[in-house]
Length: 615
Image (cartoon, rainbow, N blue to C red; front, side, top):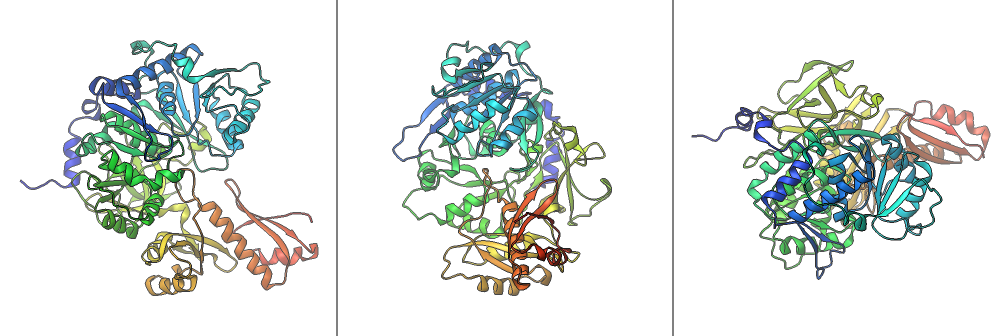
């Protein structure tokens, strides 16, 4: 009997409804299931330093569930109800897991990127009207401690703070209670909560902030049904990995680290190894990665393209990593050259999945025992639907043909319950049932999805649409290039022109002029050849390892305008910033205010908002 195609396999799976196939309806069900099935097995192994001689702090599944019950009971005694929010401002720690899963038992979890600027954190906390905050400390000599003191003054809904240490600092706000997290949970009952206290599938489990690191925060509402569905399907897809442990250095304020790399691992009875509070930002985590792969006999781990690049550059050691077979890449597009180089060097299989916060982490992935061409992200997961369409006035004008590019729309039990602020839902939904991912892609005859870029990331040069990935792939094929990013640089004549930023192995051996010549030889689309290439020491990243393009766009905008000013002998200070509502804003301080009229004429065709600052 011949092997079914991916589409046939998915159709066969869908003959049984997902609620009959998967029996956990909530994240609490998943935790309780793991405690019953794998009671004495290790759920968490925590490494605070990732030094090679460090002894991990370990929790069994039974103890993990008991501590989560204790934490949930503590929240309940502090007045947390089903629609109340517990915000978690912590690095990667065991307590982060306890806080996150327990808050979903009695209320709503709100993990926050603790590296954000305090103004942005405050905006998120006020948007969700948080009642309780879990954090490390109130020590105002630390960066996070300073942020917490500002939060106390600026978040009126906050009633309770739980801290991991005993440094309370000087708190003038007498309405707040400050409690030590571990001491407080130790006094609570550890038995499974009564059924009437447990959440239901359609209850909101988490508020995830999304949409970047600046501007108005968008809060995605994700239900217990959403998360438990994705967790169980992800665990099922990875059954071939057996019970091998998983190194998790992804941040626990991001869906990839929380859902795919944590709860789905618990669901399968596997150990989550916490690789330091800082995750991949810790030097030891990267330096000792392969040591810990060997130590825990890791078969599979989740990662992102930027970390794959770093691991490729690590000095070779005599470490036996024959246990390692699979890397699951996500969070950002995976260049084909990076995928092939990683597979060849480490004798493994690399798959690139596709997901986002709004899909509870997962939209598509390569099915077990199947393969895809290039860097396709596989098929839409069972029980969901993924289509490529042409949109007119936010309505489907037609569904694209096989292999025809279009905007990717999705629907299914993985898709979130909308944004907390109703205004953020405007334009997000197509015909009241499809979520608009904002991604461009093609779907082939096997149902494989190939992402071709972000609709908003297209470089538009004189009306000519350029996919930045065309440029990035060519640059990544150059042997001296480690990372590449292409963006649109504002231009008076064409609106935008393509430019690229790269990180190279050796600046003395690989030059910008050499890379430009390489692009001229290998990019067939003339309009897509970069106007310039700038070599950087590192590409700016978000806390979750994604390339942070706004900083590069700021750089490109400043370069373009400064060059124009030099040509026209105008002296000025130029600063470019990205405003989510206004777009690219350029602040200009002229040395000679009489030049303002000339500057206005020079910049009239630039796709930026100009703001003049008085000298």
